[in-house]
Length: 214
Length: 212
Image (cartoon, rainbow over all chains, first blue to last red; front, side, top):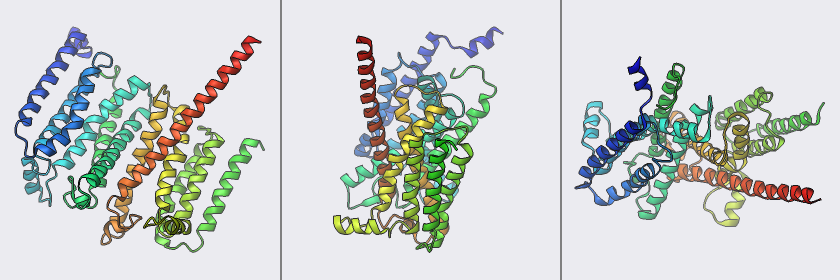
C-alpha cells in the first residue's frame, strides 16, 4: 500500500532531482554532439530553437513544473533532434541503415523526427493546455493534435521563408526536402499521425486514470 | 417562427441558392465534385448540431460568407475565377490570387466562430480564448494541405504539384497556410480591440451610473 502511494505521487524534492538529472544528461549528450557537427552552419540554424526551448523550460520550472512524464518525453525528442542536427538530418547513419533495410529512396530520419515530434510532444502540450487553460473533456484530446499540426505548419512556413531568403535559386531543393515536392505535406502528416496516436492512447488510458499528469 | 430561426433559415437558403447556381456547368466537374464534399458535410453537421451548439448570427453569417467564396472558387476551379483574373491584370500579380484570398478568409472569417465554439463548449479562460482559434486555423490549414496532396496524388499522380491550385509555385502550400494564419491573427486582434473598447465603454457607463 505504501509503495503504491509513493509511486503515485512523487515528492517535490524527488521531482526537482529527477528533472535536474534529465537536464544534465541531455546537456552532456548535446555538448558531445556539439563538438564536431557535420556542418556548423546547419547545426547553428537547427539549434536556435533548441536553446530557446530549453531555456524556457529551465526558466519556467518554478512557475510551471511539467510532470516528469512530460519532461522525459521532451528530453527524448530533444535527443533525437540533437542527433539530427549533428548530422544535418540527411546524413544520420541510422537513417542510412533504415533506408537500406526498407529499400527507401532517401534518408528517412527527418521524417522519423517529425513523427516523433507529434508522438512525444502532444502529451506535454495537452498537459500545458489542461493545467494552464483549464481545458476539459474531448477538446483536451483534439486540441493538442491541432496544436501539433499548427506548429508543424508554422515550421514549414518558417522553413520556406528562410529558404526563399537564403537561397531563392535553389527553391524547395534547399532545406531537407531532398527533392520531394510533397515533402512539406508528408512532414506534417507524420507529425499529425504521431500526435493522433499519442492522444488516442492517452484518451484510452485516461479511462483508468484517477490523477492526471503525475 | 421566431426571429432567430428566420435569420438562420435565410442564411441557409442563400447558401443553397448559391450552391445550386454554381453547380450549373462547372469548369471542371470532377474538381467541383471533390471540392464540394467537405462543405456539404460541414453544413449538414452545422444543421445537426445547432440545438446543442447555438452559434450566434455573427458566426453563422461569417461561415456563410466563407462558404459562398469557396463555392464560387470551386465553380471556376479557383485558377479561373473572373475577379481573380481581373485582379491579376490590374495589379500585375502573375497569377490568379483568388485561392489565396479564400485561404486568408478561412482564417479571417472562421476564427471568430471557432472562438465562440470554444467559449461555448470548452471551459477555457484568459489568453487561450484568442490563442486557440489561431492555432486551430493553422492546424486545419495544414490538414487541408495534406488532404489536397493526397487527392492530387490519387487523382493525377503524373501532374504532381501542378494539380490543384499550386499554379506552378513550389511554396504554394506554405503561402496558403501563412495566408490563413494572417487572417486568423487579424480577426483575433480586431476582436481583442473591439472587446477592449466595449469594456472601456461599459466601464464608463457603469461609472456614470454610479456617480448619478
